[in-house]
Length: 174
Image (tube, rainbow, N blue to C red):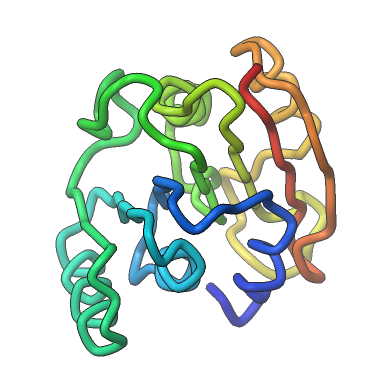
């Protein structure tokens, strides 16, 4: 996944402080979670995924890089409360390159919005619909995500190209 874009470059688009609490939804082996943990030295990063195997890989990577601010949670992000995190708990939620896999994209975004604090930032990246590479099904456009986020009361802060095959959006929770 990270071969398509550079997590550090993308994370630089966020307003980060050392002590923030963040999560990567659908983290897989945690390319973004690891980069974020290095930036949030006094904070905490949660890697959330429905599969145990990539969460184990993330734990191993964090240990091997001496990152002790990473926790993993096996969960279903398409369920209300599925992340198991409290309401308004996170400063930053990343939803990188995972929406195309979700059966209920709106439910996943709603869960991300639920756990986001006021003034918190949500970064969403996914495949361009017109890209020749990538999955054949499940893609969602940036416009569709903007509409869903607006329904949830989130405000669009930035729109950017996240590499040659992906779009990126950053929302703020007022």
